[in-house]
Length: 132
Image (cartoon, rainbow, N blue to C red; front, side, top):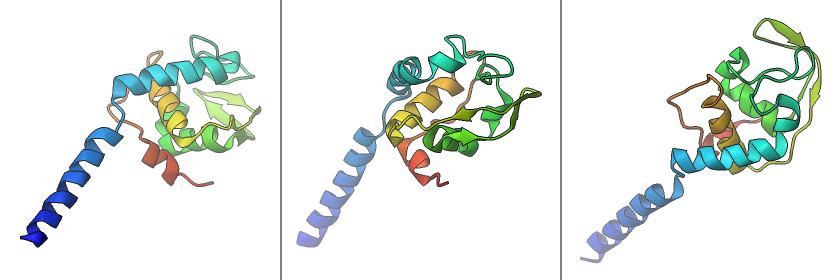
């Protein structure tokens, strides 16, 4: 009887953890928009179009197709030449010091704004798994 009670308790805790630990996409998008407005809008602008030749666009950006590179650039910063939508950029983007949950939220916001769309939810666990 104790064995079944322990199994039941472990199962219940596992289900509860999974139900309550994952942020709904709408909440993530709202949090991501706030983070974007606080940290990203200065360079990439409100419409996500950036400044040609200086700050690359996030709107309809082919750079966002590589989710790992997108997350890494926010998490660790980005330095050196890149090409976005056929345009070359060679600026420095410093890490903003965001935690993994904030990064997942802002990536979800960017991936679902300005003509970008995805069915994939970027979670804190995905961000945590990205290493330099």
